[in-house]
Image (cartoon, rainbow, N blue to C red; front, side, top):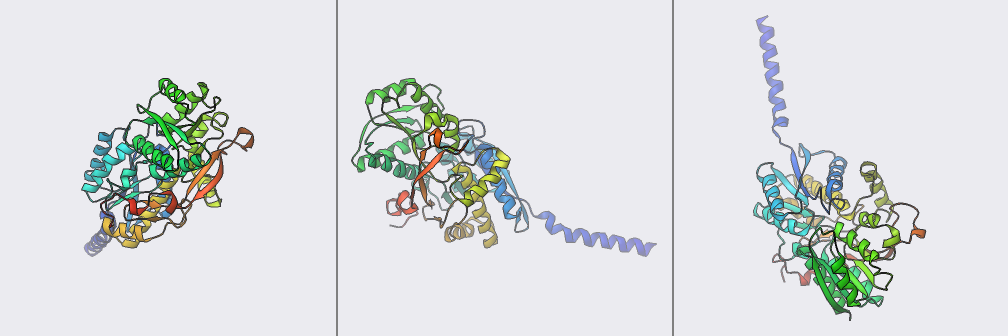
Length: 401
């Protein structure tokens, strides 16, 4: 009996020791800092969390013997809160990488925390060109769109159509300022004129005074340098004021398919807009979007599609590098072309800009749509090297001139 008990004890000790290495490996945590409850919730929010989890599932759920977990925080569109969440994720929750960080002011704040800790941060929802210029870092990636690309695709197309006088309704924060500035530069460069601008508070419900100023300017185009709920409200109220019937054209400089759905085709028809992704673009976008819609009951925005693509690209780099250390992982991310449902032959430059094709769409008339979410007609595909700021113009200190 003593011999049997001794044997059982030894067997138990051997089993425990052999299982110990697997049990000591902590999960690999990826952190999303999102707008879960405010004007950008439809653009990113739960949809971005869902896209990240889909990427983890498609990758296989673990890497380097570590289970992959997605953790999220709601920044409430407050820069100081975004910074605090980033700090907590890195220092207390042991998150290795941040993704999305919807809105530019919050992204700039969280990005500084990531830089101080030498961690990778991938921006999918924010648009400020500063993220790949003055605020760039060695482990910073600006993945989906930026104000330069949006302005270059939309502004240039409008001016070419003879829509050459502009008035801007601008959200009064970093993203809005940059979007107005970049679009104004494109308009002026190609022979157009800017007749004026007005700044509005973020997440405002009443655009009446701002729209009256835009109407009085007699500008052919009212450029909406805002996003999310602000864009939706401005378009709806502009229609109520009769701006479009009076011959002026509203141009949302950053709009998503969810925004157009909220506005409705009757009001939004004819709008020109630039997008990085559309669910009905090709077989690959349709296949991914079908799976996404099964979970979210609506198609992904470009920001959410970018989350899926960038999280998958990051995990593939971690696997190839054999480590989560930022330097070797980022090197592989920059050296490896991105070919998936979001981008074909996309690549991450020295300034962190992920270069990929952009698309110019026109919103369909109700009679042209086959059903809900069938909102866009493709007018042009703009190659990434023409859509985004040339590297030669970069203000990123990492770029060698």
